[in-house]
Length: 88
Image 1 (cartoon, helix red, strand yellow):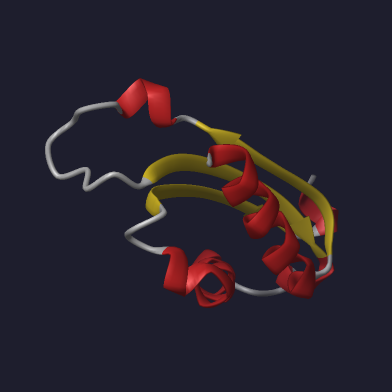
Image 2: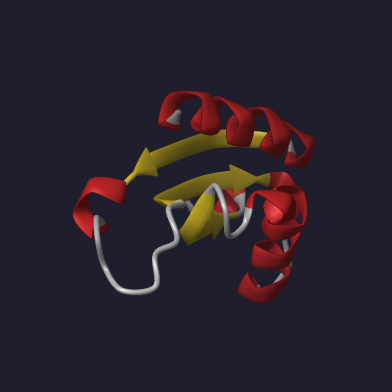
Protein backbone atom coordinates (compact mmCIF):
# COMPACT_ATOMS: atom_id res chain seq x y z
CA UNK A 1 0.00 0.00 0.00
CA UNK A 2 2.67 2.48 1.05
CA UNK A 3 4.77 1.95 -2.08
CA UNK A 4 1.79 2.57 -4.34
CA UNK A 5 0.89 5.66 -2.31
CA UNK A 6 4.42 7.03 -2.69
CA UNK A 7 4.17 6.37 -6.43
CA UNK A 8 0.84 8.23 -6.54
CA UNK A 9 2.25 11.16 -4.58
CA UNK A 10 5.30 11.28 -6.87
CA UNK A 11 3.09 11.22 -9.96
CA UNK A 12 0.86 14.03 -8.68
CA UNK A 13 3.78 16.22 -7.61
CA UNK A 14 5.18 16.20 -11.16
CA UNK A 15 2.78 19.07 -11.93
CA UNK A 16 5.08 21.23 -9.75
CA UNK A 17 8.07 20.34 -11.97
CA UNK A 18 10.43 19.09 -9.27
CA UNK A 19 14.13 19.03 -10.00
CA UNK A 20 14.60 16.93 -6.87
CA UNK A 21 11.96 14.90 -5.06
CA UNK A 22 12.25 12.52 -2.14
CA UNK A 23 9.36 10.99 -0.22
CA UNK A 24 10.25 9.08 2.91
CA UNK A 25 7.73 6.85 4.68
CA UNK A 26 8.07 7.45 8.42
CA UNK A 27 4.88 5.61 9.35
CA UNK A 28 6.62 2.92 11.41
CA UNK A 29 7.97 5.62 13.74
CA UNK A 30 4.41 6.75 14.53
CA UNK A 31 2.48 3.47 14.62
CA UNK A 32 -0.36 3.49 17.11
CA UNK A 33 -0.10 7.08 18.26
CA UNK A 34 -3.26 8.83 19.35
CA UNK A 35 -5.26 10.46 16.58
CA UNK A 36 -3.84 8.39 13.72
CA UNK A 37 -6.82 7.06 11.79
CA UNK A 38 -4.68 4.79 9.63
CA UNK A 39 -2.99 7.16 7.22
CA UNK A 40 0.77 7.20 6.77
CA UNK A 41 3.38 9.66 7.98
CA UNK A 42 5.63 11.03 5.25
CA UNK A 43 8.56 13.39 4.92
CA UNK A 44 8.70 15.26 1.62
CA UNK A 45 11.89 16.92 0.36
CA UNK A 46 11.32 18.81 -2.88
CA UNK A 47 13.13 21.35 -5.02
CA UNK A 48 11.28 23.20 -7.77
CA UNK A 49 11.81 26.39 -9.75
CA UNK A 50 8.11 27.10 -9.14
CA UNK A 51 9.07 27.83 -5.52
CA UNK A 52 11.39 30.68 -6.53
CA UNK A 53 10.54 33.86 -4.58
CA UNK A 54 7.57 32.17 -2.87
CA UNK A 55 7.15 31.97 0.89
CA UNK A 56 7.17 28.64 2.70
CA UNK A 57 3.43 29.03 3.26
CA UNK A 58 2.75 29.37 -0.47
CA UNK A 59 5.07 26.43 -1.26
CA UNK A 60 3.22 24.25 1.24
CA UNK A 61 -0.14 25.35 -0.14
CA UNK A 62 0.93 24.35 -3.65
CA UNK A 63 1.91 20.91 -2.42
CA UNK A 64 -1.24 20.45 -0.33
CA UNK A 65 -3.41 21.43 -3.32
CA UNK A 66 -1.93 18.54 -5.29
CA UNK A 67 -2.28 16.00 -2.47
CA UNK A 68 -5.41 17.35 -0.73
CA UNK A 69 -7.78 14.45 -1.41
CA UNK A 70 -5.26 11.96 0.06
CA UNK A 71 -5.41 13.72 3.44
CA UNK A 72 -6.28 12.44 6.08
CA UNK A 73 -7.20 8.91 4.98
CA UNK A 74 -4.01 7.90 3.10
CA UNK A 75 -1.73 10.65 4.44
CA UNK A 76 -2.11 11.34 8.15
CA UNK A 77 0.94 13.58 8.49
CA UNK A 78 3.22 15.28 5.98
CA UNK A 79 6.47 17.03 6.84
CA UNK A 80 7.49 19.32 3.97
CA UNK A 81 10.91 20.71 3.13
CA UNK A 82 10.39 22.77 -0.06
CA UNK A 83 13.24 24.65 -1.71
CA UNK A 84 13.87 26.69 -4.82
CA UNK A 85 16.95 25.61 -6.84
CA UNK A 86 19.02 28.58 -5.63
CA UNK A 87 18.47 27.50 -2.00
CA UNK A 88 20.02 24.04 -2.22
